[in-house]
Amino acid sequence: MVRIGIVDDEQRARDQIRAAVERYGSEHGVDLQVDTFTCAGSYLADAEHYYDILFLDIDMPGMSGMELAQTIRLTNRSMVLIFCTNLQQFAVNGYEVSALGFLVKPIDWYPFCLYLKRALHAVARERSLRAQGGKRILVKDGSTAHMVDVSDLVYVEVRKHKLLYLVEDRASGGEATFQARGSMRDAAAELVAFGFARCSASYLVNLSRVTAVSSMNVQLGARSVPIGRAFKDDFKRELARYLATREWGPLQQ
Image (cartoon, rainbow, N blue to C red; front, side, top):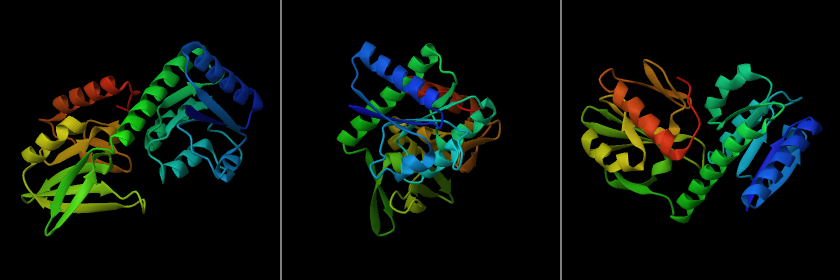
């Protein structure tokens, strides 16, 4: 069963999305449980507010859908977020919270099916990763050996012949940096199979963390790292290949 939440202050919109979810489940033989909420506050007040997929309106009284998404991302990076809105000018902000994409209201059936299919694939991948116990690597920081979940590793930086592993701390919501001996070539050999790619001579980044790419930088959520001219084309090809194999949505270019 996949749990789906809908947060929208308009009953008509909630009813339309619920009907579309139920139709999709019926036509594709997928067990989808749907709950609806009239605002961000009612969602947060639900002690059991864990969902695999969340459809969010942006323009709501009180806390907006974007603010709710930012709150969710403080503790949950795996929930699939899909914005349903007529405020297309806010689409770029969706990348800051790793949203799957935007659906324009009133919802059309074809794009809805496309996004829900992608969302269900993402849920299946996340569950598979959890079932496997996640992929982990050993990082030796001096006399201390750290077991690091690959999904928590944001990037690896080489500096003065040292490797710096920037790791998200799920418990605190902060970050930690572990220093280890080794070369960038060694780090790449270990991590490329897990969805990492070099964007410069100094950085190896987790492609699942990429939220935007410009001519000068790669955006990893709130962090930005430079993209090297000699690496730019290969990096973008690797990113495109990664997104294609994961059936994920487009990134800001």
